[in-house]
Length: 334
Ligand code: ATP
Ligand code: LTN
Image 1: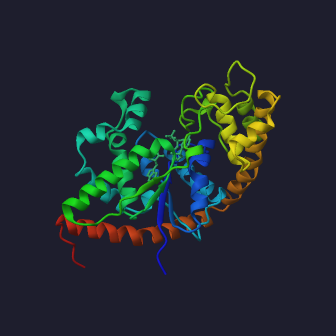
Image 2: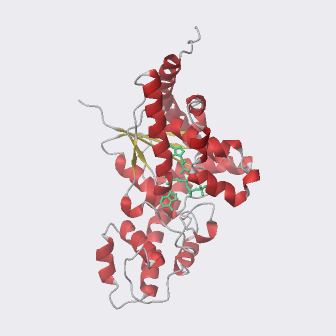
Image 3: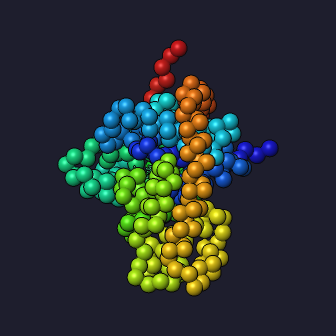
């Protein structure tokens, strides 16, 4: 029997709730990819600390992120679901990867430029600068074939490919060169207040948080920025706000966007907004209930985390040992 391809991805515990773009752009695809793949999914807590976090909040957010991944449909008995900091090999291989990355190469990462500009570049940490290289290690340490992510992560997967090839060329075949798995239709869900920007946890005003109350979710969607026309048409260039709502509605109701458009012939934006809000609430309500249920049993959640990281470490420690050996490091005795 041939071994199934391996997929791997991660999400940051940087807020108390996932936003709709996390689910539609990434986690929904993680759920689908469990079938037919050997799936590894993680809460990337070491990435979250690249910006200052309140320790008590971070602790809650790590558990909440883990619970939300399960509530979205990832089955921890099928997939390997774990917390990044429980597997020390990420940071260890991260150092190796930093040592083969050019300073200029790291400087070209656009997410760093965006995130550091937001807070003033003098305040950005060195960790925020090198974070894409830790992500490279996250992926390579599992020999992943595919990385299901949103469009904003494409550049980091490209860097992963470059560094895997560089290491393999210098030291002999060691790492699988992975591909980004990006679903075109939902690769970028836009901010509801600024439909030219990506919806993000760190831009809360234009985001829909899945754990918010249904009334809050509905209000957010009903106040989405559209345009001064009235015709419902899918045209991301000239009608980004309306097209974003159509993408959200079509995906959540498993329909093609063009089929959805025909429903709004002669109807206005009001109907589209209200149906989109209903579709989001229909997903979010049971999702939040399942998260609450999982959070009510912290011991079980912790048991799942422990089990997941033990499975993950089996793979990660093997890859790290091979990489160290290829580099010429001597294995410790014992
Ligand atoms: P932050 O604001 O803290 O950077 P974020 O909301 O952008 O957070 P991440 O934890 O960085 O989310 O991303 C998790 C996954 O969700 C990634 O694969 C990312 O590409 C995807 N993702 C995030 N926002 C969107 C979006 N608006 N549309 C599509 N995919 C998205
Ligand atoms: N950088 C990603 C999160 C992330 C990730 C990964 C995604 C960290 N490590 C490995 C895929 C594979 C983000 O900010 N969304």
